[in-house]
Image (cartoon, rainbow, N blue to C red; front, side, top):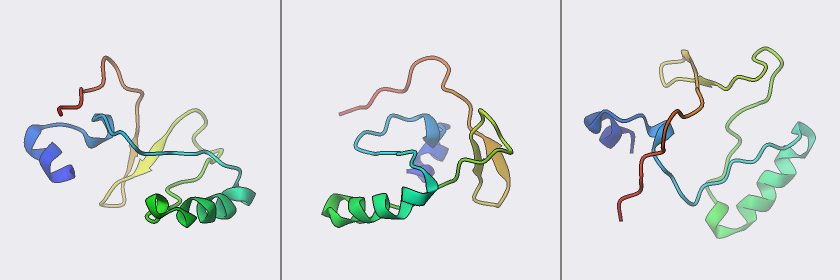
Length: 84
């Protein structure tokens, strides 16, 4: 997906993506929730992708592929439509 987005000049974070779940769960329940999701064959690849921390209140900060940091801004305008 990222290679195609790069060719088209799109940011993969802002391309419509259906059938995915992001859940915000208290840290003490995270492993149990993850195990329950992985119990279903459709959740086999589920994983924990981040933490809520006090160092960036109200901001989503992502670690990049080259170990830098990037602020993930709210989408402005319309999300790109899915082409079927």
